[in-house]
Length: 391
View 1 (cartoon, helix red, strand yellow):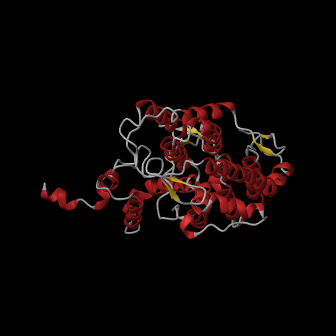
View 2 (tube, one colour):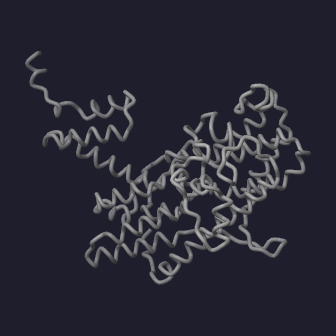
View 3 (cartoon, rainbow, N blue to C red):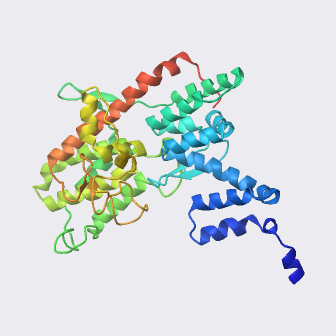
């Protein structure tokens, strides 16, 4: 027995011994990958043992960077693994492949998607710009370059512009689907009858995240299930959380008189309903809220561009609070203890109608500017190039 043990080497052990044991010990996934890579460089046997697992991890990390808008990681991977990058830009995933966002906790079924088609459907302008910049760095033969351009045109053609209507003031604004309006209205209305059976949040030492009435908590739980489903869905099947946030801000403004100046109910509606929705936005939209929605829109209105600070890029509010929640179902942080206001601040009590009205107007401008920017930059590509009808 001793002789058998003595003859064992690292490469004789199954892969699960390395991966599962480190994961079970709480080692972060990135460190597990780094350890596997280091071991794979030590000898041919370990290189063979870890080769497939490392390739799968690189594939998954590459996709994770796209879904979560990690621009520097995308650039790094495209430079390090240009062949894999080309593959993921030109070949749609043939089978079921699931990624969960580490920011919003939304779960995406990515079968049939390329990097660019996923970014387009999520309306990630910065990711789109980064992917196309990385494409320009590829050194390709004419045949492969033509294929890449065809796939780029096909992916860009899948951008969905928001429908517009003319309001009573004669201005164009985004047309919100009725289903979104209905859910937004019900999500705000439930607070009009909130009785705070466990006490007023934030008063007399009562935690801000104290449970509200059963009816309100049930409504909020259903809202979370709509915004962040527990099961994987294709991107097209997911709720458009930006469009819903616009509907929610409009519903708050419309229902404000019905609260009869009950600031406890109004504060709870902002903190719990609006606060629950904000952390479901994509990263680059989250950065805008962290920076200051009103300042970013002010720059747009003046024909300028507001630079996003290092703090906002790190997804931190002005007091250092995190814009995103730590877990899908946690009862702390955004949506429970506070929400982000239009100035990028950590806010616990901000029930005034003006804030919601301004937030709705500003956020509508952000959404419209995104459509306008995409049209200016890419409409000519989709118009000039006839994409392949293969899918």
